[in-house]
Length: 360
Ligand code: GLU
Image 1: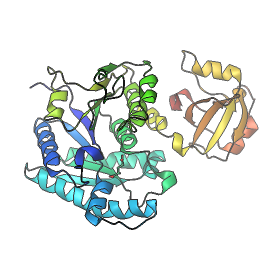
Image 2: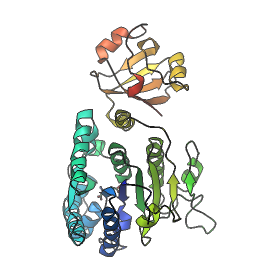
Image 3: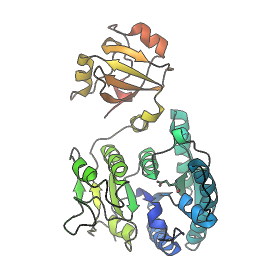
Image 4: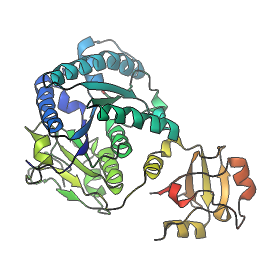
């Protein structure tokens, strides 16, 4: 077997890991662990992002009384995560593999320092042949600062760890060109850069089991644009991981082809930082034209019309046009007071250098 990638992130969704009665599907977990162990033995470096804590905790506690949703998530995840990691530990041990638990929150990605710290933690695990098993720390993460879901988290991890591929395993074969329940619907095998598939995603919103496809698709596109191949595939299919990674085999799934561009580490961090923006700048038409043109240009104070919010140098800001269109995010070279003083001025250092600019 000849493998396509040497460094991958694999995300396993809750519905792959749970049975219809809500309990953890140990048989499925065990099958996936066997597949991962096989790849690990072939020298593939792997980070696993696993959901299933909340679902597992819910089924263990079996609480019927009415409870606040945040309380539920905190309680269920505290119990379910312990159970989940325990199973992974035992299953991987059978293959002689050591795993480590990484529980994280969105805040841990908010500054460059936090981000590098997270990256170092996982890199040191990989260097020592320990497989990181990552999940959101649902027990402590507060609603406003939560990941949309583990798809978003897996995208951040794949990008941060410079993975060659991200594999998102769910309980469907991929993105369909119609409702998956209809016999005429087919899986879209490949989605290329710039290909618009929003029609398929929107038209299927009301159908069962498609709710998560919108985030999956937008995360997948963003990650593929950073040069990482993304696959959305069915984690319930036997041997799905080796099948996906074998150069020669063909398996039904949706692949987002990676862009050939080489994106720097700092740009990758900025690309995922919109949620941490401290302020916003509105720019004029000329500046917007320059930024969205073919050339890589910096955002200069001369093009800025207004500045909102207070920020420090090196914080992330959002960039908008006069008519309110969101253009992207960037890391600023001035604090907000200084930026206000320089607004509209020519021949001064850029507000956001092009190396620290991420445009949608
Ligand atoms: N972190 C959640 C869990 O482990 C899953 C979030 C999601 O559904 O993506 O249950």
